[in-house]
Every structure is written in C-alpha cells, then in structure tokens.
Length: 179
Image 1 (cartoon, rainbow, N blue to C red):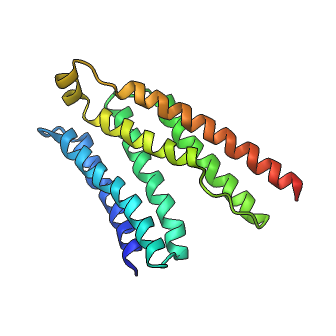
Image 2 (image 1 turned 90 degrees about the horizontal axis):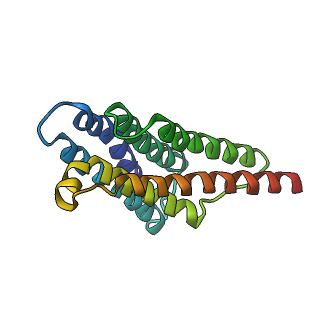
C-alpha cells in the first residue's frame, strides 16, 4: 500500500476519534475534536498531492479518498446536529448533495464519462471545512470576538453545496443526452 492510501486510511481511522472528542463530555473536547478534524482534513490535500507527485494514483485511492472525505464531513455535521449547533436540514442537504454527486458520477461512468471536481466544488469543500472548524471552536470564537462567524460561513458553504450540486446535475444530464 502506498503512502497516499495510508494517509487516506489514517483519515478514516481518525473519524471515530474525532467523534469521541466532539460528543463526549470532556474538558476542551471541542478543541481536541477540531484538532483531529484539522489534521484529518489536511491529510485529504496531502494524500492527493503525494499520489499525483509520485504517480501512485490507484483504484483503491480513487474509491477511498472521496469516501473518506464524505465520511469525515458527515461525521462532523452529524456531531454538530447532535450537540444542537446546526439544524438537521443543513446536514441532510450537504450529505444529500454528496450522495447525489456520487450517483451522478456513477451514472456518467456507466456511459464512459468522467466528471471531475470543478473549482467551485473545491471551494465548496474548503468552505465546509472552515465552517465546521469554526463551529467546533464556537466557544473560543465567541470569547475572542463576542460572536461566532460559524453560522455565516456554514450558510456560505450551504450555498456552494446547493449550487455545485445543481451544476453537476445539469452538466451530467446534458452530457448523457448528447451521447
């Protein structure tokens, strides 16, 4: 197994650790959860970079990397719903978009097409990660700023999520009809 795939597996293994810190009633649990989330998120960028740089892109990596990303974000969203920090409809919308895009990619692949991530989708991911980190550290932001920008960034991420989901739908169905 190459280094990039090991990092992807590490990210998956970090998810339950993250959830324990996010949900357990321990001192500074959210700080630990945010730290684990940040490290796990950083492995996403790192594993892709390493795989491309070393020319070690594998089918296992193509499958596990996006799965690990979706599991990490879903775990954070579900944890924040459970702690009452975000409404469930936002989590369902963001997670639902991921299911939709995965399905669309599968549909396109069945027709021999590859649908790559757009630049806006990459911005969506970054915005989601930033929003989740801010929300995990909400108490610290409130203490520092007097308010938490987490909800604002989350709604921005939600807008990118919905827009890019619709964009994937339109592009996929247009390409499928043309073939």
